[in-house]
Length: 166
Length: 166
Length: 166
Figure: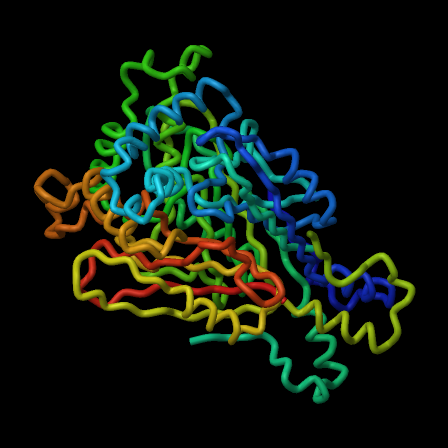
């Protein structure tokens, strides 16, 4: 299944109306929105797929790419399953790979922070996702959902949605 | 080495033919294809670079970006070396970081699944890659190859190739 | 905060001059530059944000996406904090997750290499980042900085900056 827009193999067949349409097609659209969070706990996973879908609809983009990234370096945006047990597994697994305690084990925490582990957890889960837009929809497999992963919450933080396409 | 298309510093020099060309340049192309897999084992790494190159050729895109992502949440798309020994090292390393057994150690597996470890392995190896397209080619360093990483195989699954550019 | 360019809700109001502008808007720009490194040590983190900002300025792109990726499979490009203590923590943490020694523990090193661990460290830290371009700037949160992560240095290696937009 592939799709190329518009057909370029018949340039001679363009009427004036088609040309105008071609020009409109050609306009690269660009859309930007910040999603804000204030997670009451240190760590949490929040399904933001509905918000990203709303952004896409608002953008009017039919074909292109969506970038969703954490704007903070102790948070992630990632795609996985919306299943509570899995999220508990992630929490436990990330805590084993990069434990919060003892906070004194990290040089970074000598700056007065206690969030060095969050900088590590975020690298495993990733900063961003790039999602294809096809026919105006997030081009997803059956279980793909977008999550904001908070590893140092209890304050206002945000993710960026940037959509580029036509 | 940088390249900006087309030159905008001489807008006054456009003839009618140039203008038409400009309009054609302006058309943002969009291409989509699914790559299907049915890996007979639970885990495997498959080099999909030739398939992605075929997609790029078919798209006709000369300058832009290619997104290749797993459409399933227990699989990865990543870029690394096509070296059998390294793949054995990855297998062993990922199994140490997120062991399959005992399956009862994961909350997720209480849903009837046994693939919680696959959801973790995929986060380490990543969901997607974004590759530059320059002069109609994947803009790669000397050893870069694209792999589909299967962590819960023995069923039909797919990756998405989305190309956006001109 | 969202922005869609140009406004399409008033197509009837286009004068000839506006149409010409519309066509110019439509031109998708594409920019490419390689950043070269020769790190004297095996491992290092280098802040490349100023170089990427210079590329963006040179490209003239106002709205779009920047891809920055390692062109080598034993190096990373990632976004995190420019804090020396954190970088020491990353070094120690990555060495614990994928130790360099003993090099004989990796099949890959039987090819004559000693860098199998670098192929693993790079997967945790990631190959690439995709950054939004808004109003001609890298659309960053307060602490986001782009790093080249070297895990097998002491030779000339490079990263790619590809910018697509308008």
